[in-house]
Length: 421
Image (cartoon, rainbow, N blue to C red; front, side, top):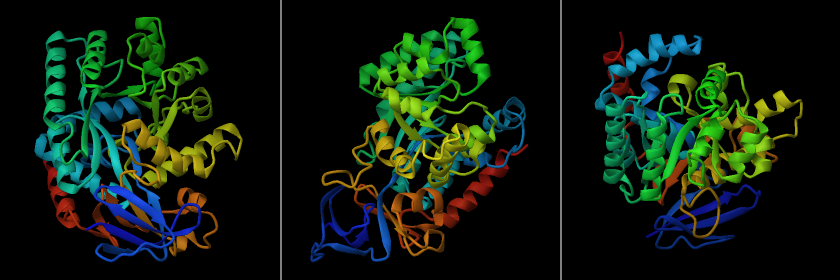
């Protein structure tokens, strides 16, 4: 038995029925019989591909509001790092479940994550029905013993979890950043990624301090340095990239790398730079959107991040047409799925049925004229009514079917108390 979604409004504005067979979209047509299938009444709802959060640290939802309105280094040294030292696997699991609950509420059907205690993150994805690309965040700070340990943990996690949960959990190799990883760790991460034909997930050019530090140490800017080590490629997801030159944008495009733009986190932490989306797109890089972690963003709303991605470019360029709503929506769906190697992100026959239904009668969207602008500039997380991942109904009419949201919030509150100073 499959699922037939009846009377949904597509992004084009047309009304259609959709047949989901197994984990994929089997047919999109004006009318499909629901006989023998589970029926979802989508009258009054917009059907979209689920959002893909291209950069997150899901365990950090426990750190939400732990140190707002502070300068970056003070925030890290006085609040975040001390709290993280007190986080074990149970705390990361609780934080990840809390993150997943919010992401599902906002229409996110897949996310890309880098953190520690990644077994807990993977278990949370398996439990909830969420799709994810997960990598253990490696940091060695030039310590050879630490480097060997980090690489071992990362490879062990990859071997244990890649392809699990009916293929919903895939794994990557995730060296944290050039300023926290030795050259040897970065090179060996590339070797592991090649060995397993896996993705690389890394932070690049997030702050001026990072850029100046790598320039002084390696005589190259971070993107140039990463390229020289073989890090950049079609399976590379580079988070942030807010302090890059046109030449670096060209390198990212030449290598067909993906850039995960995190506008809300960058603005909240006063990173200062602005990711040059038009230049990246012109050069052929794949632009997608991430929220970053709830520690730096507070929210994990892709709707919010889409809106800010468009508005930040318009504001900084003095050009209201520089990034359209339709482009921002593509960043969060089609481009995000491509970045993570997920055969989803589009409403097409044969694509994975990672789908969301949005209430088109919501006051925030009325009067409804054009779908993409309504979603990007007006929609809120609460407007998402139904979520389907891989053909499984995860949320229906606003009710979570695979997780107990109230219990998740309670457990997260308890876990947050355990790591408080």
